[in-house]
Image (tube, rainbow, N blue to C red):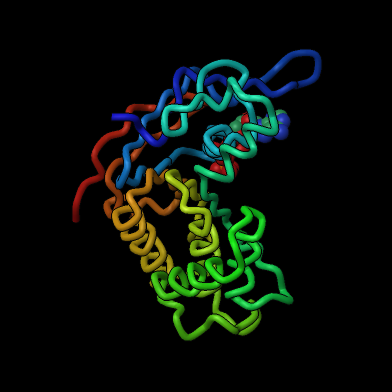
Length: 231
Ligand SMILES: Nc1ncnc2c1ncn2[C@@H]1O[C@H](COP(=O)(O)OP(=O)(O)OP(=O)(O)O)[C@@H](O)[C@H]1O
């Protein structure tokens, strides 16, 4: 079966003075549909670099990035962008919502960029707001929402393009404990419901047991994913 996400021996070197510094050192990672992998590791170990490479935002120096079996590293930049829009949902630490737009409009913009007809886009946006527990909040602007609710809008927006891979960078860093746990539980539920291959960078070790597996980074190297212990 073709995996939604597969990194094969990826290496990433950043230019550094006269030489280079290695952010990813021969990293391989496979994530299947319906599973969520937590990515842990100290600051500077390469977690964000791994997400950026998996998201096809940065091309690795060597190695392959396979999305549903398609090697993104072999494509021209325009085709890479099209593949990214089709296959990938990205959730950054901060929701980055547009202040003037309602929750519904934030989602509609995401599908407008993908050329979805307005009516279908509205229907899908309302469905997704419902899925993330914001059915009654479609017409609120970001300042009328709590931090946790803003992050839910962010999550719903990432799903507008029906991605097969969901990449999440520290989704709980701006939230208190209770809201953080609710957001991680939501990500796990969405991973199952939509059959996503999810990678979540987290510093919150206490939420790792909610995921399927944890892989640890150190100095650009990724350890093998190990099952996350169930509570
Ligand atoms: N644009 C860049 N140019 C040069 N070096 C970079 C660049 N971005 C990151 N690095 C370096 O690559 C390494 C990995 O950084 P990365 O941001 O991936 O780590 P991280 O594990 O996500 O850290 P944190 O937990 O602090 O966000 C670090 O040594 C960092 O200094």
